[in-house]
Length: 194
Image 1 (tube, rainbow, N blue to C red):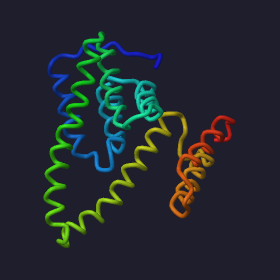
Image 2: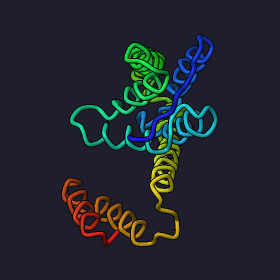
Image 3: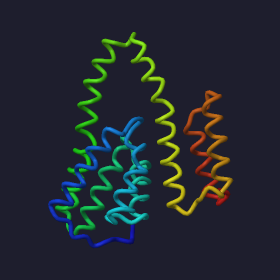
Image 4: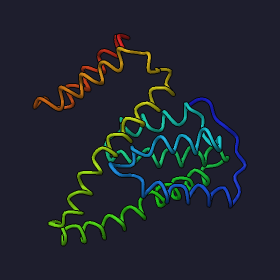
């Protein structure tokens, strides 16, 4: 995260930042990680509040750290705030990003779960649950493409995509624990084979 930006964010910018995370919260079907493509568009491409390196490092550090994967939201807020110039802005970025991401989805999830449990035998409820699976998968694929292309790996880097496909099939069709697949991927990356 060596490359930083110098931002001059006003109250309207912070409000826009918070409102964007409020809207992303309702898109976070399958977890906050599924919203990475739109976060990248908003923070890096559209507003230039983060660099590609800061964006990718926020995701990578949070995924490597123990705890919930939603920590990358806090790191992005922190980086936007630090690019605005101070620790106080960093803490404001964390607060706005996390509150925006957690409040709407938590309230909606609680209410929808209560309703869904009461109406679990309705055909519409069952159809909704089945229909959400392909959307979650598509959002996760888009996340992988964004992260791979931002780190210099494009679609023509076939060993990476072959490894991802083989790993997915092995995980799907066997009882092999995912940590073994991650370990193999880490070793292949360490030796520079992918």
